[in-house]
Amino acid sequence: MPTSTLKNNDSTTMSDLSEKFDKIQRSLFAPSDKPVVLSEKEQQIKQRWERAFTLWHGNPHYSDRQIVRFLINECGISRSLAYKDLRYIKMLLGCVKTASKEWYRHMVIEMARAAFVMAKSKQDPKGMALAADKIGKYAKLDKEEPEQLPWDQLIPPEFEPSPDVTILGLDSTPNMEQKRKRLRSKYMSKYDPSQFEEAQTIDHE
Image (cartoon, rainbow, N blue to C red; front, side):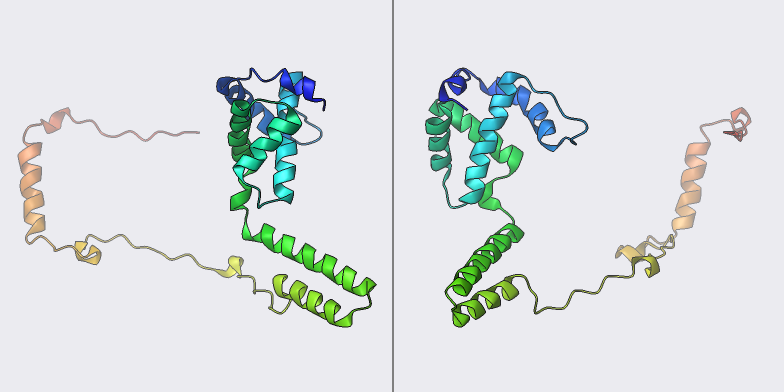
């Protein structure tokens, strides 16, 4: 995208980006049959974020400052707006510095695969063996697949209610039943039992 087009967005404020964030996020993950329609300005912001993330994903050692410099030089925006973009790129697409272990494993395997192809083209059996060994190690091909738990056969524990508080490690209160009767008499004496009404059963059907 031409730099001059992106410079028109340099007046974008943090509140503007915040308002557009949810919509752009939905557009990234929306199914192809239900696309989210973005305005021209929203589309430009989305493209900036995608370009920066693609660069960062391919170069996970890049610092925040290098990504900001890319946004300034390649997308033609100001430093302040670039830092605003950086914040939302991390929120939306995930911080590359905290990429999962699985992603790094994938990256190592891909490098080992490239080394294998290179060694094969040079007819270097030792290099091929070393690269294959790395692939096997990081793909965990030497380990057996964990046996799946028989979820359909697992029986959940049954809990029985109990008035015994010692089960919880608490001391039992002596003469508890007598104290209950005394409290019932104390508080029920304030009410006239003749005013009580029988509970009615409600048939929801």
